[in-house]
Each structure stands twice: as structure tokens, then as C-alpha cells.
Image (cartoon, rainbow over all chains, first blue to last red; front, top):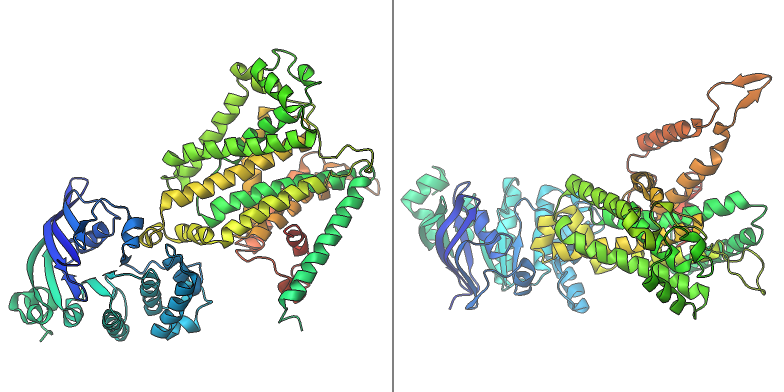
Length: 239
Length: 384
């Protein structure tokens, strides 16, 4: 049994079919990536897993239990947490307050305090700037904060929506090394990316989404070396 | 020396401020005859500061632009008035159609309690009814965004006003005649000087209400409110139930607004539905914006400053001014409001985010910055 099983999931926005019967699985301890162009349905997939968007068909199972139809609060309580696209930090609140909001559903004060220290270890920049308004951080720091905020919920599965969006290449490298680190510490990661090259390098397995359908799947490095994936998503510079 | 203020010295300062304030208020209220203007300005200011803080809770902290304040105040004012008007004089108030028999027997039943308890009951009932209305209309309305929410709540406020003054409500609200003979704040007792309580009672109630809201904002609920204000989608992704928290904020805000409405009825001694027109909401919005959206102390400070300048300090603009035999033009009834509006524009231009922005008053800031914030003290005192 996989940790997360998506079967024939479809989502409609009004009359538009954003997802057409997609199926994939995420096993415990893996980094799984969904890659695909704009409008392929990547964000919609994550939003429907986290309950922000309701599915029009299919099922989502967590530990074998159907979770489609639950609201976001219940899904976060189960340990499935989304880092939304475009960071969406709470700009006029301090870094520390942002982190505390991440732990909103937890009631173990000692554990929350310890986890804030853990985040400061993981992201030393956040410790330096803990009193600063989140809106004054740089793009990379905001992304770190968004990840830290989500980790404060103690997720079993961390879902990341385009963490490299709009960031300088050097920062992107940092972000991906952090993703690997988080994964090594025991969190399963479901990652969606337009930067397919970086995503497939870090991922155990990948799925290629094209206009709402899964076109291809395989181990990260297999997809990375696949001719058609290279042509479509990795450009000529890939190797 | 001032930069590192210890907790102990802050507590000491707070305590001193409360003692000084209470003494001052007491001296003012027992000498009401000589300081009538000051007493009534302070009463009105402190009442409006409750509404301003509760509007700030909703608009400034939760990011819900609601304009229903006048309606909720009306609910509180009418309920408080009905239960606080003495049963002996009630017939002279409802002189056209009389009070509904069921309400009259309920009122007579309550007469076994002293008047303070009846008034308190009226205030709380007003708050609860307003809270219930908020909960009900919140379900459809709080899903709306910014301007739409403002229009929906504005509409609600007008509906309440129309219902209160409708002839069908004659036996309950006295329709368009309004209610009079509402008792004031002063405690009637043979042992206390005349006027005792005129200021201390509304200040104490305001301190209670505002302290409650401050505690709510400082709690994890308050953090959730601010998260919703900052980014609804991100807040939801963190597991914050949007509707539940918006409802909570709306209900608490409406409850407190109704309490303030009840106090306003006691301040005015007579009310009718026209008191709670939309301009009432605008006055409060003005206080909140001038004080700074997201600053509790800003709202309190601004309630006092705006009320005092509008009703008192600028009064002389309304009197004809004759200097050296020449009548200075423009000084006539109504000119005060022109000056007031100009002042508002100046404040808005120089303090884009209100007097306090989203900062809060602190003693260390006041003491290390005596020239820039000379008046901030007033706001903090009341929170003790």
C-alpha cells in the first residue's frame, strides 16, 4: 500500500476539464515529482489533494483511507501539507509569526517551540531575520519561510508547488538541496516543477503531465535521459 | 536607561497610569457641573473607542471590510434601552401603543433585581442578539470579498434600522417615536457623591471589552485572523478554517459593537432609529482609519482625539468671530466641519497609515520619543 494513491482523479473548473483521470502513487520516504508545461494540471493536482479544490471524479487515498472530500483542515491534520505556489508568505507578519501560524493545528507547545528551533537550524537566515516582516525578505528567503512554515505543521507528506519559481539559479540549487535534506529527515515529498531538469535530478520517481493526463512515468534518472522528455521539457542543454 | 525597560517598570508605569486615570475620572465625574463638556466628551469617546476597536478587529486584523456597525449598535441600543427604562415611566415612553404585554411582564419580572443588574442584562442580551444576527448573516455574507462584503453589511445595517422604526414594531421599539427616559451611568446611592460612575462605569466596561479583544488578538485565533487578512489561500493551506475564523471575528466584533450601542443609548438618554444611520458607521470608520488599521491603541487614541476635536476643540469655528470691530468671514455654524475635514486630509496625507500605523503604544517608545507622541498616553491608560 502506498502512502498516497491517486486513482482516476478528475477536476473541472466550470466546463473546463483541468484533470482527466490521472493516477499516480507516492510511497513513504520518496521524492516524487510531477512535471509538465503550464496548464498541464500540476497545481490543480496538488490543490485537490489538499482539499482546496474539489474533485469531480476519482479517489485520493492516504494510508489506504479515502481522503477526497475532506476539508483542508482535516487533510493538514492527517499530515499532508501544501507549500503554495508563489510562496504566499504572510507579508505583514514577522518571520516568527509566520512559522507559528504553520503550527496552527498543533497543541503541543513544547514541540512547537522545539520545531521553531529546528527551522532556525535548517534555515539560519530565518533565525537572523526572525523579527522582520516576511514581506521584506528576499524571494529565496520567502521560499525558505514558506517551506519552514509548512514543516511547522509536522507533515508526513510535504507538497511543493513550483518552489523554484522566480528564483535565481543559485538559490534554486539551495532550495533543491533543502528538499533533499527534508526528505532525508523522513518527510515524503511531492514536488511539482517547471524546472524539470532540477526536479528529476532530485526525485526518486517522476510523472509527466500533458494537458491533464499522465503521459509517462518512471524513475527520476530514467525520465531525465528519456529522449522525448528531453526534447519536450529539458531543452537541448540537458544531458 | 529607557531603552531597556524591564517588565517590572512597565507594570509599575501601567499601574500608576491606571491609578492616575481613575482618580482623574472620579474627580471629573463628581464635579460634573463644572466639567460638563469634558465629562460628556470623555463618555462619548470611550464608547466610540469600543466600537472602533471592534471594527478594527474585523477590518484591520481579519481584513473583512464590514460596514454594518450602525446596525449592530442599534440592536444593542434598543435592547439596552428597553430593559433599562424604569417600569414606572415606561407607559409615558410608549404613549401611543404601549409596550407589548409579554415584554412588559418580562420587564416586571426583572424588577426584583437592582437597576444595575437589569442594565447589565440589557447590555449582554443586546450583545448576544447582535452576535446571533452576525452568525446568521455571516454564513452567506462572509464568503464575499472586500467591497461586496461592505455593501452587503451596509444593506443589513439599513434593514435593521428600517425594521426598528417600522410601525409593526410599535409595541416593542416604539416605532418612529424612539425611546426616552433611558437612565445614565451615574450610580444613585446615598453614600456616594452625586455623579459617581458617570465616567468610571463606561470606562470600566470599555476596559473589559477592549481587554477581551486584545487577548483574542494576541491568542492563536488572532494570529489566524491576521493570516486570513494576509493571504486567504495560504491560511487555508495551513489548515485554518476560513469561514469559522471569519465568523468568530464577526461575532465578537458585533457583540462588542452592540455593547457600545447600549452604552451609547445610556449616554444619549433618548434614541431613535435615525441615530443609527449610515453616517454613524462612517464616523467610526474614520476613527479607525485615522488611528491606523491594525492598531488597537491607535483606535482608542483616535476615538478620543476625533471626538474631542469634532465636538469640542473646534467649536469656536462655529461662533462668529469679531476682532477689532471686523467680523472675520467664514466663522459661522458648520464651519467647524469644514476645518475638521481639512484636518483629516492633512492627517491622511502625513500619516498614510493612520496615526499609529499598525504599531501599538509602548511606554519605552513614549518615553524615548517625548516630542513625537505626546498624546499616546491616553490610549494606553485605558487598557489597564
